[in-house]
Image 1 (cartoon, each protein chain N blue to C red):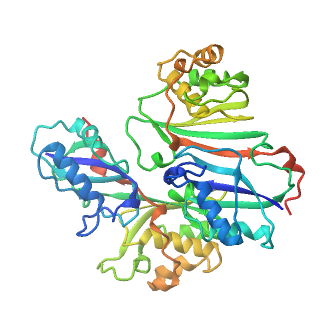
Image 2: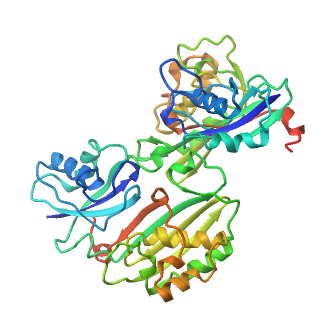
Image 3: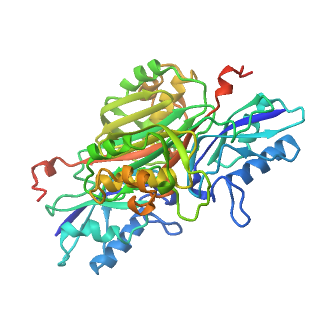
Amino acid sequence: MRVLITVEYYGKNYAGWQRQKNALAVQQVLEEKLGLILQTKVVLVASGRTDRGVHALRQKAHFDYEGFFPVKKMAYAVNTTLPDDIRVLEAIEVPSDLHAQYSAKRKTYLYKMYVSRTLHPVKNLLSAQISYDDVDFDKMQEACKDLIGTHDFAAFAATGSHVKNTVRTVFDASLRREGEDIEFEITGNGFLYNMVRIAVGTLVWIGIGKLPVTAVQDMLLTGDRKKGGKTLPPHGLYLKDVFYEDLSSLPLE
Amino acid sequence: MRVLITVEYYGKNYAGWQRQKNALAVQQVLEEKLGLILQTKVVLVASGRTDRGVHALRQKAHFDYEGFFPVKKMAYAVNTTLPDDIRVLEAIEVPSDLHAQYSAKRKTYLYKMYVSRTLHPVKNLLSAQISYDDVDFDKMQEACKDLIGTHDFAAFAATGSHVKNTVRTVFDASLRREGEDIEFEITGNGFLYNMVRIAVGTLVWIGIGKLPVTAVQDMLLTGDRKKGGKTLPPHGLYLKDVFYEDLSSLPLE
């Protein structure tokens, strides 16, 4: 039986999703606690990694299980053993050919930031400070649209990443502002390493006048990472949701 | 010269505002860092204590200073030395008879909570979980109005507090709901020990049907703490603002 779990976590205390040798990862905590509850070895396959310090509102992961523990009670049971910064929101049985990573059709990321010269201790837990008096939000919105479409996003990958195919499709990208708070949301069929944090960093650099409003276009045309903005810090980034088209036709009980 | 500072802090790592012998308090950190910057002993008098784990969006405190460091630069200077969970938002000179505690005319507290059987790791940093399927929000709103006015709030004080006068005036109290998120805001001329957390806990117990909608009235009439709900945890509570009538007429430069 294949089980798909939906996981929320606050990433500050973890070396990211994926198991590491010398640092605690979300995957390791979940595999251990699920293993204890289900009395078997659990190997999780996630929709993808999240980096050190990045959060997830609805990360998805699957595992195979041959046992008698009811799927409907797994989330509740494992949650009683998890630390407060990780929770399983849901566990459902899925077809055995559904793969948390390869079957994912779309992913949505959210980046939260606030424009303020003073760090705000409360909101800084969930949101990254942009330490300027203001940003040109209209320009940021204009450039944001350039992210949408099927492009070679090579310029939006962290140096040192070695993916062969850097073409990705961004279905939607948008910015919302309320006072000093800005949210960036982006949905695509996949993302390169640090792609969201580089994209939003480039929009911010356009907003503060360090880059022209054409910077996103320039990056897409030239493939040159140096034409982009700074990679923003991980604590503003959330894996918001992962979508599997097949699941829409599944009975959820 | 008397200086009034506005302070924001996230309270999780502190034993509250007030200096303690064996635990770190916000006051101690601020006094030490201000003392280093101003090269003198700084003694802060706050608008009032906040308890262990409680946050502040705009706590106010005054201190007296005889030196040449410009007041306008104090916030920026001390912020470069403070940990990320404490920031001075503003420092201004005020008349020497203004007292952060005794001159305060009104204080506003905010309590953030969410109604969910599952703990949510991200929002749980800023908000307290109400672990129920739902609450009767209409009843909570009805009872909330009973808090408004000048009453003997003896039933809303933690047992073990020994204040002589338990009469306080609540100018406003209101609840807002958005999905599973609920915010309680209360403004008064002063608050007894744990008064806000007992008040909101009573409203929640009314909402989940553990207390009648008349519970606030019953408490005010009888002075009986046992007729109220549970004291909610500190991590949902924020000292939102403190108001000094005199200051409205003050030039801020």
